[in-house]
Length: 473
Image 1 (cartoon, rainbow, N blue to C red):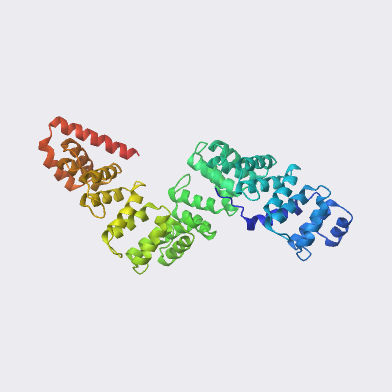
Image 2 (cartoon, rainbow, N blue to C red):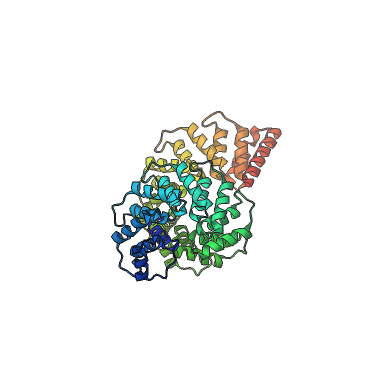
């Protein structure tokens, strides 16, 4: 789970609350505020501490901020307790100390300060200053959320969405996202919008999806901007428009969203919704690569492999494929296996090829399964085994790989890796032939004489049922 309110943005927000939500209203006149604070006015003391924290009308001075927070806290002021918690959490004027931060947040939280309740929950969630405790985090966020704290409402939504410390419950997640979204939380608006697109926890409703995504996007939420781009690209709930898709992808990309950078780069590469430009394509792909986007790493690797828009560079292609493959990107794993298998740009190494093929095959990559089957059939880099080859080809065939279907049919016809079975051979050759494989048609004709008319009809029926099932998947 990712919490978007990272320290650098939280600091400004948290300290602004000290002033913004003070029970005393000021015209930000330092001398007047100072006089009131010296006179013991607790609201003025909190306001003055905030002035010293921000350097507003005075030079920043954390020591003086601490002094005035402490004076206000001595009068039992919850906002001052919250302010002290923030000072200790971030090490402003004191040594950073999460344990002390929790102590001050707890005092303010017990007094009902929703911001302290939220921060206390966050420290429990992160395991800072105390053992990680998702139950305690949820309980404090619930208290804050019930007071209308949109950040607590959003994070409760995340807990239920991903099943962190609670049973996964998309309906409950949507409830909390909606409450946060109604309070203007852009991340909640973006997630709620996408739930309406996917039909998770509610009926699909593109009109409501667009409403929430636009609200989030207008606040600069990059996820919402990306998703609006996807909707326009696919024509989901809106007229299909590559131009409009590119516009939203650009806004998200400008906000640093790596997936949007990848998609925008791809659109420039193909001239889709924008004027084709390899320079722009490479610019956006490289920005996405720099952020570790596996899609961009793979596509840029393909460019270097083929010399598309860049000089051919097998070494750079291999580096990019490996970065992508290490993140589990199945096509990158397959290509690494392919390059080691063929010895393209690298010394031929069937052992390494098998390793990468296996990773891709474990994710259902049909061509990797087929290539592995071929290696086991020949004994290249692995012990020769027709039985293993047959199993791998069978898996690839079931994923729709026509070469595997043809080879599997041939193995059944020859009795390789098991008993000879002409009917099973005819089933797989029929499936391969339906995709236009001429070799499969020729092989079917060769084994027809070994089957009765009834057996041929039964095999064709089984092949038809398989193809119908594949079409509906």
